[in-house]
Length: 69
Image (cartoon, rainbow, N blue to C red; front, side, top):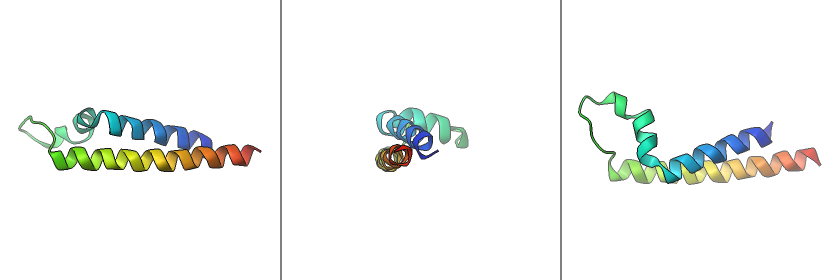
């Protein structure tokens, strides 16, 4: 279970880290009438959140592998 969740978290974290503008389009752009680009703070916080997702996902993967042994 941890292995599958870890892989999903790493995948989401990589998406947040590498494509924060696309993440903005999926999650936040529908809330605004005026089309625009995400702020620098949003880009930074999304990338930071992506790094945290990757770290937690890697921990989950390691726990999942350890659980199988």
